[in-house]
Structures are given as C-alpha cells and as structure tokens.
Image (cartoon, rainbow, N blue to C red):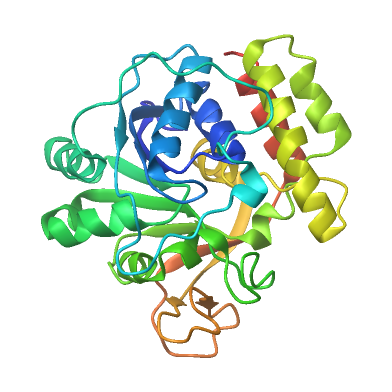
Length: 315
C-alpha cells in the first residue's frame, strides 16, 4: 500500500456502472483522491452525463467534488449512445432529484491539461470509464502532458469476448475509435479492463442484496440501478447477472492483486467499418509489435464485490 492516496481524474459517461465506480472511489479516500470528474458524451449525450456525474457526487455527500463537462461528440464520427442499456437518462431506475451542486465553467479537457501541468510529474492517474474523446483531445492539444501522466487505467475493449455493441467492438472504444487509437499510441503506461474481465464480475442476487442490506441511500441506489441495467444483459447474454464494468478500474487502483493480465500490444481498428473499434490484442504474442498496455484477463469477482460492499457502505 502507498502512504498517500493516488491522485486520479475520473473521466466518465454515467451510466449505472459508472455511478458505482464513482461511489467506490469516493468511499475510498485512503486509497484514491478524486481531483475532479470530467464528463464525456457516450452512454447518453453530454448534457445528461455531466448531470448524472453531479447526481452521483451528491448521493455520496460529496458536493465538494469538481465536475466538468468535456467533449460532446467523438473526434470524427457521429455520436453513438446506449439508452437501450442505461435508459433515457443514463441513470434510469429510481428517480433522482436534479443536482444542486454546480457544474464547473471550465471545459473538462482544459481541466485535465491544467491539472497535469500543475501537479508534480507522474502523480496523476487518468481513469476513463467511457469513450476516450476527452483524453485524446487533451493529449493532442497539450503534448507536454504525456510525460506527466502516471498511468491511464481504462475500461474498454475486449479480446476473447470480442464485442458488445458490434460483433467486433466494445462500446467505449467503438464510440470513438480515433480517440482510442491516439491514447494507445501515446506511450503512456496503460492498464485495460476489457469485457474479458468485466464479464466475470457479474451481479448475483446475493451481491445486489448486500447493497440493499446496507440500509443507506447509496446502497439502495446501487441495488436499484443494478436491478435496472441487469435486465438488459441477462436477456442478451443469458447470464444470471449483469457485468459491473467500470468499478473494475477503481478497484484495480485499490486492490491490484484482484486482477491478472498480460503486458501486450493492443492496436485499435480505425479503417474497416466491419470491425471499427476492435481492440486487436496480441494476447498470444504472435507479432513483434511492442507491448503498449497491461491487458487484464481475469478478476477475483468475490474479492471485487467484497471491496465494493465495504467501501460503498461507508457513504
């Protein structure tokens, strides 16, 4: 364990599973210090993702967290959203009041750039939970920050699970493959939580009940959000629960030993419409392309849900 908490920026398109990830971070102050939350268009349009990010911070009682709106569309492609999974607000399920905490006036990308320039080098980790538009835009606009980023730990991509929005691509990468390509070619140390891992972290009845049994508002909300988006995945995959994708990113920062993976080369397909956004992961080392990412392949799901229950119960 490090003595001081890791400084992170959460870049997100909430999303029920994004919400759980943010709550995990806010419930773990000894491990992670959230410098700010930047919203991006993804699961739903930007006007909803920035609103949802503020709702989640308020639910955690953390109105002090700075929330910024970032990019409202991918670098070159039309925005693709996922209301069919997350509902029309992105946080469908229980109704929540409009947030009262303010949205910061600064653009999310400018916040990322300024923070990396002002914090000591290699002390800030970026945690993208949605499309990589904000991150890629920051890297393009301010190449001087590339060497200052400690790590990028992201949820996105797939190899053995292949795709969930097209036969070949995972949603976050598919929404903005050009942005993902920039990030993966940046040379920044990257840790990837692909569907291969997140599909092993399924909500079961017992795991959801543990949230409900907390008797707190965040616990109840997590249980109800999970109930909502679980229906889509259970129907689609025929599984007995839904994957909690995004909390894997924050869990890795707190308990890296829960995950196993390989340092490999990952390339992003940006040319073919058939396989657009595919994460071509050289898991078997069949090319001589240099490794550019720690690509996770396995997770201790019981350990992950135990951590989630312990930390969210604090809020």
